[in-house]
Amino acid sequence: MNLDGTISLLRAGIDRIGGPALPIPLQATLVARVQGEIGDQGPHMVELRCMNQDGATVLPRIQGNIDIPQGGGAANLVFRLDVEFKEAGRLTWYLRIDQQIADELPMIVEVISPKK
Image (cartoon, rainbow, N blue to C red):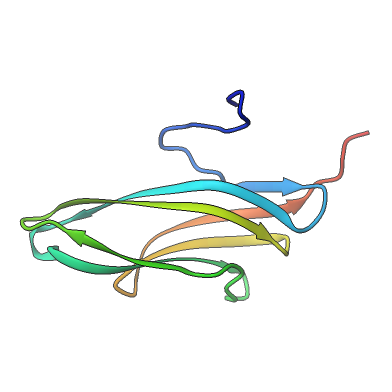
């Protein structure tokens, strides 16, 4: 952990967060690199959504667009998150591109009792 309370890791994910009571805050940056092929050039719709095990969306969806360069190539996505989880349990982040799931990240949100 850095002096400012942040964690900087390459190719690492946070799959569990906790706090002493709900809501549990999370300030993080989610970075994804999308690799497009030659036929993928042009604009594409992107959506990031967090859902619980019942399929309900638990945070507001983030929507935007990316542009794959002519001939294919990469586009970087950076999502700055400053959210509060109002419920504990197993959640899944879904990254969708053009209405297709491109990636998913499971996460557990839990209330943690202080150790005595």
